[in-house]
Length: 207
Image (tube, rainbow, N blue to C red; front, side, top):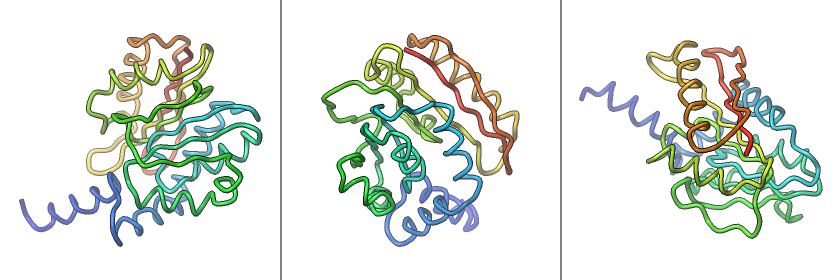
């Protein structure tokens, strides 16, 4: 592997699992990039979060969607799980007031090692994380079980890096929709947001 490929791998690795100084810089990029903010706020809007909802986000990064969830679920609970300690720290800082008020609970963890929760959720969100899960179908089945009857899930994907196109986004959206149907979700649909550098797909399903 050449130096260029090694450098690119190091950069993408920071966005996959941010750590150290470079991880903090990656978190700053994710938080301030306009397309990231637009994508996450759009996805939260599709879930139609209500004031008393219990919400779970897996892979919350710097906490942009968490912040939007907390703004909407004013009398509910927003829980987040992320496998990067750097992202947990940044998201807690970004949502400090809601964390202190007990309305936001951010934990270190992953889709493969979800902690126990005392009640099911009304809404679940994952943005650009499903393709990194060890067994996406098994994880989606577990998330199906973590929802209350009638609860909703949203899986968001925006391809980045070499070879990323709108067609890759659309094809991946269809694959995710098939997975949701396979594990028991109903009313599965795919929404698309036209963004640069590539379109974003959000696949939604109901338990």
